[in-house]
Amino acid sequence: ILGRSSWAPTVFGTAAPDTGNAEILAMFGTDEQKAKYLSPLMAGDIVSAFSITAPQGGADPTEFNCSALMDGNEWGIEGEKWFTSNAKWAAFLIVMAVTNPENPPHSRMSMFIVDAGTDGIEILRNVATVGEAPGEGSHAYIRYNQVRVPADAMLGGPGKGFKVAQARLGGGRIHH
Image (cartoon, rainbow, N blue to C red; front, top):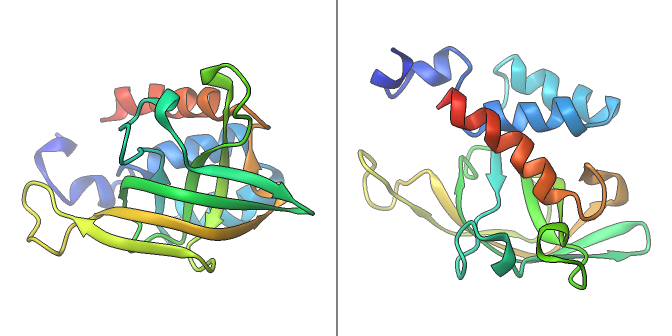
């Protein structure tokens, strides 16, 4: 019934990517992250974005090249992501980046919470899908250009990004 309306998921709190991001925060977030991001997300006060898909490799994690390197007590995120839903409205983004390039393919990535106002987030364009006017799309092509996040912005631990993504996407398959 909710799927028959473009606005019902937002009204009833079941809109993607917020439901999946709420699950990530509930399962892998710290108490501080839950207070800052999960509570207002669940209250409908903010929206979020999920930044995983790569322009050169789609959702295949073996093709990701957006990286995050530890520098002092911060991570530096570099690279591009494609089809990041809600980015132009989001208060925060959950970003998957390669942190352990020497590991086997499914343990190379980690997930990070990135505040939307962080310097270096560049929305190159918003891509339209069915029902959206050209230039008014809700799916961003993003460049992360020397984006700095604190060490504790990681969700689920180093190299656990694929595990976190699967925990999120499993529920999404049922919700949507």
